Length: 265
Image 1 (cartoon, rainbow, N blue to C red):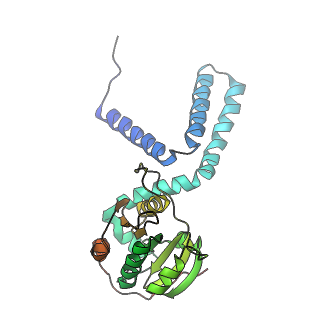
Image 2 (cartoon, rainbow, N blue to C red; image 1 turned 45 degrees about the vertical axis):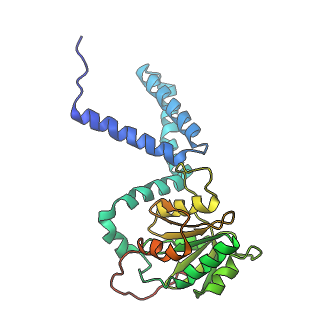
Image 3 (tube, rainbow, N blue to C red; image 1 turned 90 degrees about the vertical axis):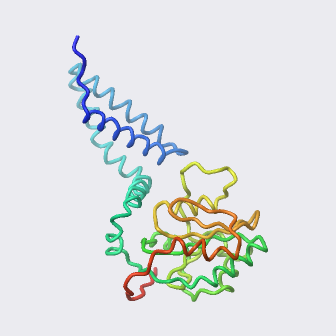
């Protein structure tokens, strides 16, 4: 009996399929998507068997279901597919010039002292906070999910927004070009495995930095601890006097100045 030939191309093919399946698993973990995908796989294998047995009628019916199913999958998993493609794009650091060409926002030096002071004071009072510092990535969808503020960045403004009885305290603040652009913004929560001690704010901070170059500052409501997230990783329990350095090491070097543009609804 002759063995089936196994070449380097076959190995690469299996490796790529395995990587794709693992990526889909990580992307859909914690949702009902794996059960849906399992149902699709079962239908596909039934269709293969039906074709092999030349059952014309059933083959036609299942073929139509599969054809329509591709479009249904694109609609059903649109958010997950978008998140997956964003994660792939964020790994291609060598193609950052593409983002600079198409991004609607410019990279400017943030005046961080109001944020540093506000976070230090909120940390002492155990006031929860979630602050997103934009860079080159387009966060228009995140801004649109919140309430437009468009006000000059200041300590008093940040502390008033995150005051526990304030109407805008629940959610994230987006800071761009030394202005608070929006508040009460909804951030995507990471699907990556994280310690159970991480709260919703920390998971959201990791989630938005997995698909953008934003820097996120978190103040824990439970402990008052300050954290900084970037590129899908988070540094926790940062002392207030070290916060500026923790943020600065993730700031992208300023490029040629461009006209400030603020996205408005």
